[in-house]
Image (tube, rainbow, N blue to C red):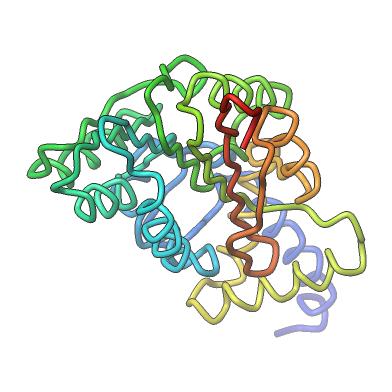
Length: 268
C-alpha cells in the first residue's frame, strides 16, 4: 500500500461504514430485513423461534414459569389467551399441558406469516384456535389467563393503558395477566451496565457485532420499553390489585397481575 493510500484509507473506511448504515441492517439467523425497521413479516416467521431464543436471556425459562403458573388459573369452562403468540410455541406448550382440561386456548397474532406457522404447530391440538387479529380489538371475556410474552412493548405506548384496562375489565374475576417485557432502567449507570452485559450475552450466543448493532438500529421507534415501575403502576391502575415479579434476567422481566374476586364481604 502506498503512502497516499494509507492517508486516504480512513476516509474510505468511513465512507464504507456510512454506506452500510444506509442499507437494511443485518440481524442474524438468516432473517433478511427489506426496510431499516424490524418487522415480524417478510420471512421472519420461518426463523423466529431460533432468533428470539438466542436474543432474549431466559426466554425458554419464562415459558416454563408460565406453564407452572397456568395450573392455578386453568379453571373449567374458561379460556386462556396468548396475545402476540407468534409461532405459538408457548400456546402449544400450555395447551399440551392442559390437553384434558375443560379449557380452550386462543393464540392471536397480527402477522399472517406468524399465524400460518402457529396453525401448523397446533394443528393436532383440538383445544387450540389460532386467529389473525389485533390485541386492541379481540374479546377477553371468559378468560382466566391472558399472556403477553414480549408483546406489549411493540404496542404504541399511549395505547397500552387502555388495552390493559380492557383485559382486566373483561376477564373473569380471579383471572390473571402474565406480562413479560424488556424494561428500561430509571438509573443511567445501571442501564449502561445492563446494556453491556446484554451485548456480551448476544456475543456468546453467536451474534456478530454488525448483527448486534443492526438489531438495535432496527428496533428504534419499534420497541419502546417502560420501566418496571411504570409497568407495575399500569397493571394496578387497570385493576390488577395484586402484582408480583415472577421472572427477571437483566432488563427482561416477567410480572403477574391478578384481578380481584368480589365476594359478599368485599374484594379478596
